[in-house]
Image 1 (cartoon, helix red, strand yellow):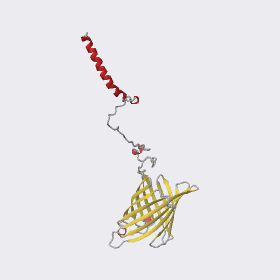
Image 2 (cartoon, helix red, strand yellow):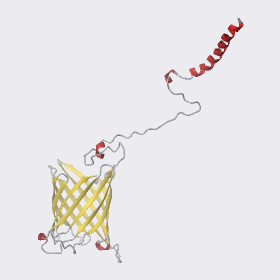
Image 3 (cartoon, helix red, strand yellow):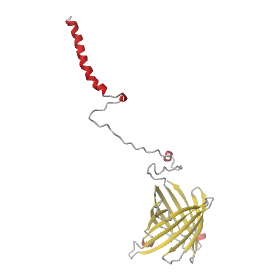
Image 4 (tube, one colour):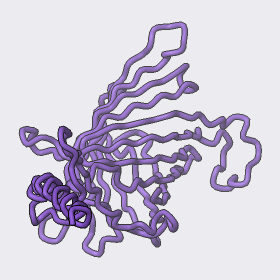
Length: 290
C-alpha cells in the first residue's frame, strides 16, 4: 500500500507549491491588457513623437511640370510656392533695346528674383527701319548685366499706404567701366468699382566707373508708374513719370499693354514725353512656370 500512494502524494505536494507561485503573475496583468506584450520591469516604456506632413495637392506635377496646380496653404507647411520666370525684349525706333530673362521664387511673405539683361545700343547707321537684316554688328556690341532683388510681399501694419517692397541690385561690368545700381521699390495694388490697378515708386542710385582708375560717379533717378487694368482684363493702360539727377527735368510716358494669347504680352509706349527727343518703345515678352 505505501508503494502505490507515494507517487500520488508527490504530485499533490508539487501542485501545492506551483499554484501559489503562479498567482502573482496572473494578478499582475489587467483584463484590458490581455493579449498585449508584457512590459519588462525596471524599464521606461518607449515614447515617440510623430509629425504628419500633408499630401501635396498636386502630386502629378512631378510627372507633368506644366500642369497647373493650386499651391499648398502657408499654414500647412513652409515650402516654396511654384516659381515663375519671364523673358522680355524691348526696342525703339532707333534700334536701341534690351533682352532679359528673370526667374522668381516666392515663399510665404518673401519674394526673390534673379536675372540677366543684355542692352543693345542704337543702330549707328541711318535708315534703321530698312536695316532689320544687317549682319555688321561690330559697332553694336551688347553689354550684359546681372541683377537680383529681394522683397516683402506684405509690409507691417505701421507702414502707411504701401503694401509691398523690394530691394533691387544690378551690376554691368562693361558699361561705363563698371556700373552698379541699387534701388528701393514700393508698390500697392488697388481696386475701385470693378477697375483694378497698381502704383509703383522706384528710387535708384547708380554709380559708374567702379572698375576704372578714377573716382566713381554717382547719379540718382526716381520713377513713378501707374497701371490700370481695363474691365476685360486683357488690356492695361500704363502711365509713368521720371526725374533724374542729370537734367532734373520731369519726363513722362504713356502706353498700353495687350495680352495676345496665353502668357504672351506686347506693349507700346511713348517715352521721354517733355524732353527734346521723345521716343517710342515696343516691348514683348512671355512668362512661364518652373
